[in-house]
Amino acid sequence: MVKLARGSLSIPFQSDGRPVFVNELSIQELARYCLDGHAPAMVELVRRYQGQVFGLCYRMLGQREDAEDVTQETFVRVLRSLHSWDSERDFEPWLLAIAGNRCRTALSRRAKRPAMHALVDQLPDDTHQWQAAQTLSEEVHLALGHLRNEHRQAFLMFHEHQLSYAEIAEAMDCPVGTIRTWIHRARRELIQELRSRGVVQESRNAVRRV
Image (cartoon, rainbow, N blue to C red; front, side, top):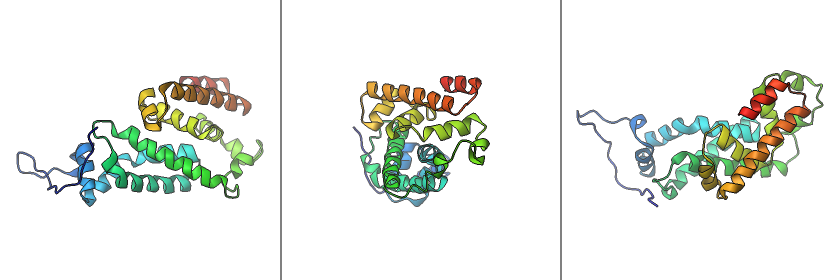
């Protein structure tokens, strides 16, 4: 395991004397500059990965405001924990595992609050909110809220972020067989939920191909 350490880093230069901009750095180089307190590198790390992190958080939490808050929490945790990242391994699974953990913490906090955020899920099927959910994307988003937290995280990391079973297993600290089971169950439960909502046959087939 190779972990990055803080050190005195200078701005690198190319062979022609031009400075290397942070958006040209590898993730390993970028992480080293972040550890050294280089503010532009920190901004670049967030810029480079914020879309993926926010996407996972929004899918898991179902609320834009909560997703924005947890995305910010995730990057604060990431910047504080960069020294523990094994730079010989891919960065994205490690990052998304932190995001997923922060989401599960947020969901636990939400469960202890009055269920204001769950209002949409409690509305009857004939309300305007349900009538507006016409696209498959909207239907899947709503159905995801009914999955167990760990099943939802594994499903999203596999289908939306294209991580392998092994990468997800390492990130979530679970056996590969467990991850396979979670993803299979998540897919099956999503289809069942979509059936219960009357999603058309073509949409159900599309979910099977996801």
